[in-house]
Length: 327
Image 1 (cartoon, rainbow, N blue to C red):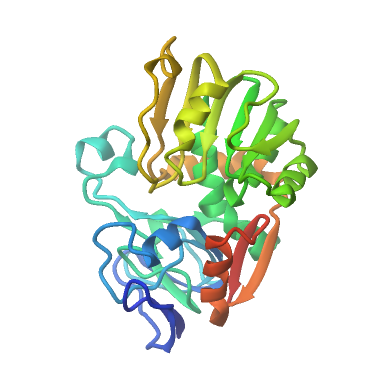
Image 2: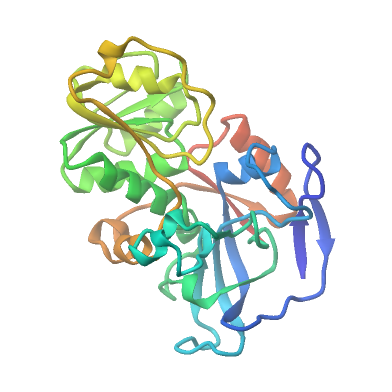
C-alpha cells in the first residue's frame, strides 16, 4: 500500500510503499476512497499532542470499502462502505466505558494518532468502531462528517437548545454545524480572523445571520458559543458575547492557554465546558438525523501525495470548508 508517514515532528510527511496490512481479530481492512484533513492531524504532525509514537500515518476522517475481514467479525460484508473516525477503540471496562462515556476511556486508541490512519491507500480498523455509510453518496463529501461533523454535533448538543448560537473559527466543523443549526431554526453568528472577508462571506452564504471578527461583539447576546479555533484568548471573548446563563463550548483537542479575565465575564452562571472525542452513539445519532442528510460539505480535493500541501493550507487558513485526500 501507499501511505504518507510522519517520521519526525517538524518534518514533512514522507510518501512510502508499505506491505498491505492484514486485519486481525475483530478488524477489517478498507480500501480508502477519501480521507479528510482535520486540525487534529495538524496537532499530531506539529507535536502539539503528547505521546505520538513514530512512525505514524495520520488521518481519521476516512471513508473506504471493506476488502478484507479479520477473524471474529460478524455482520460486515466485503464491498461495504464504512467510515473510520477518530475514536479507534475503547477498553470497555473502565468506569467511563461502563457508564456510556467511552469518549473518556482510560485506555483508548485513536485513528491516525495511536494507530495507523487514513492518509494511505488502505487502513485496518476495529470493525465495531467503524461507521456504516451510504453506498450511493460521494466519499469526498462524506469524509469531513467523520470528525468535523461528529465533533461539531457533540458540541452542538453541549451548547443546548438556545436560538442565538456563535461559532468561533469558521472552518470545516463550523461550516457543517452552521447548516445543522440553521435546519433547527437557530440563528448563527460566525466569528473569523480579523479581516477574513472570504470566510465571513462563506458563513453568510450558509445562512449565518451575522459574520465578523472574533474581537467584535455580535448584534445580539448569544445563548451559547462554540469555539472551533484552537485559540485560548477566544474564551474570554466568547464569555463577553453570551448572555446570563450562557455556555461556551470548547470543541478542540488542543488549545493555546486561556488568558486571565475579569470574573464578572463568567459571573451570572455563565459556563465554560469542553468536548472530548466522540462516542459511537454520537455517530449513529448524527448520521441518522435528518439534518445530516441535508448538509453540503465544501471540500478541496488533493491527491494523497499532496498531503503536506493540504496540511499547510489548513495551517495557514487558506481553506473554505475542508481539505480531503484521495489516494
